[in-house]
Amino acid sequence: MSLSPAFSEKSFDDLPGWADDDHLAAFAAFRRSAFHVLTKPYRSGALGVGFNAFADAYAEARTVSPANRSQARAFFERHFIPALITGESGGAGLVTGFYEPEVEASSVRTDRFIVPLLSRPADLIDIDDANRPSGMDPYLAFARETPDGAVEYFDRGAIERGALAGKGLEIAWLADKVDAFFIHVQGAARLTMTGGRLTRVTYAAKSGQRFTGPGRILSETGEIPLEKVTMQSIRAWFKAHPDSIDEILWQNRSYIFFREADVDDAALGPIAAAKVPLTPGRSMAVDRLLHTFATPFYIDAPSLLAFGGQPFRRVMIAQDTGSAITGQARGDLFAGSGDAAGEIAGVVRNDADFYALIPRALVSGARP
Image (cartoon, rainbow, N blue to C red):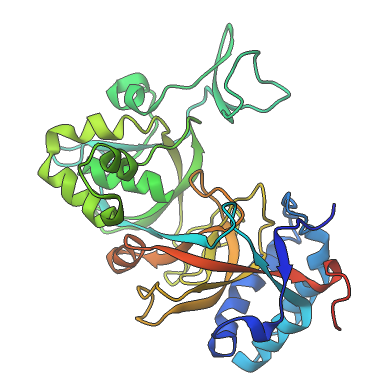
């Protein structure tokens, strides 16, 4: 596998603000993946950044802990070469934000808590080219097992109208349907149960249909101008139009199933697709078909000020993915957990330059 021509080799001097970043925080996130791969390697992305090329960087990250930012910066410069990634349209890339909501929940249905979060159903099966029935949408990675073979799974509207009622799948009950929907979008949440216990739900599977965001629908119908679509503006529209919530949300046919997990470290987010806890401000979701998990990226988004009020220029580690995150210069920045993180994540939609930090072994003529 050779590197994609989408990469254009640069030097670290070419990266705006490189010397000012907190490379130690980025190293800590990278190190978590370096330990995880001892259990299971990551799949190499189609752009040619092969997993095996990270071996030296992983080995050093597992055995040496930099004492300061300068040493962490030297680690990245020693093992990687930056390469600008050209977006599919030939221009800059795009970053958005995601977070882990925190909401109240109940372990049983009550008059207040009426919206369930569901665990994976027993009849939901994984589908790929080896077992996909003829004529089934090739996009579908999940299906419903029936005596007559696999069929497309129930979609959001069918499930919320009761298609899975009575199967005992309820993990927890929430008070608000919109809160539940945004937990589906984020793929995880911290739940404060009515008895005071803190727990977490994380992604387990999905019904498989394509994601259709309410922001796009509300923009296309003229309800919210595209440039003003944020999580906050969407929530405000739903609050003002409660009778239209189902009409909008059911157009997103994809439905997410969860599993319960402990909150082992309150400073970190949930364990995501790369099988390590997400690090606020340092973990990023990417298109996993194109990119290899644990690849460091330097993101230059000078118009993005939501993270601390300064232009966003920092090393991010690819440790998650999402159905809406498609393209070679596309990233979703993890902002953290709780309402404050939600305020950050909800407004992030900024142009950005993406620099992949590519292992030196893959770059012809890279300087030692």
